[in-house]
Amino acid sequence: MTPPAPAPTPSKTGPMLRVAAVLLLGISGLLLVKLTPLGELMAEERIIGMADQLRANPWTPAVLFIAYLVIGPFGVPVSPLVITGGTVFGPVIGAAFNSLGLIGNAMVTFWVGRKLGRDAVTRLAGPKLRRAEAIFERRGFWPLIQSRFLPIPAPVVAYGAALAGVAPGRYLVTSALGLTPACVVHTYFAPALILAVLAGEDPVLLFFQYAGILFLFNVAAAWPQIRSRLRRRKRYAELMEARRRRTLPPADTPTAGRHSTS
Image (cartoon, rainbow, N blue to C red; front, side, top):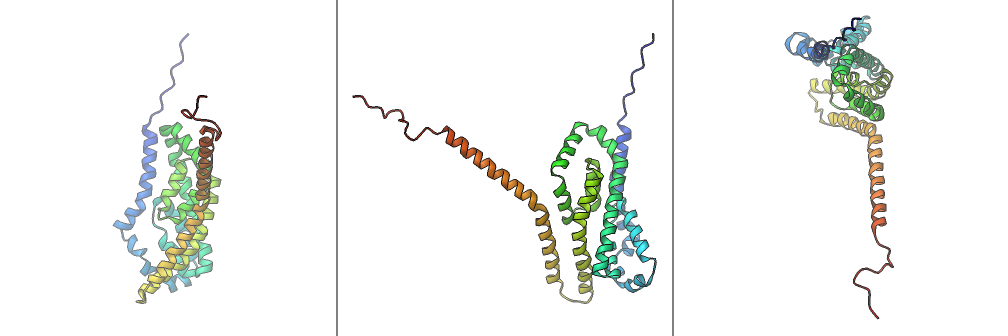
């Protein structure tokens, strides 16, 4: 009887190419902005100058939302789209529109990351990936929210979460909770700062208000982790104090050298 042929060893070339594809997608948008006329078209001053034309065009909302979805996987900066939404729709409707666009942007990028790199990272990382997944399950909720208030490129967050095995539902919830308040702040302050600069006004106070609100949101998002860490330190200190007390001799126990002979 002929023994069965051994199963072929899976090649690591394919997974590595897929990881490389994720990395290339992440930087391709930056290269497009730097090396092509796309950067000039997305300049904030140009967007502000075209505000009336964009506001009068009925196709602007659809084009803007599609742009949010399309540019996500390529790492193209979304700040021009946020400024466009705030300028065209105003701070209230613009914040709601931008929030939906950014959440869609995040989910599309996350989905592309899972399709291109999830299996690849599973093969290459093995048990390390499972440990990373466990960490995300225990601690990844609030850090994912906090990342939305830090100067971390959106594709880095999306691809990192996808490759680390964050569940889609968890990523959607944390994206909504983190992006919505951040988007409200960006939609209001970013166009206001640009208009102040174009008008020759001093934007320092406005900038500090912008940075201060983002800082407060960042602290609020990090507070559950800070509180948990403080509780662990307090518990550790209590355990060490209890251990120290157990090792001390009783107060009425005579020590060596204090015994007297009658």
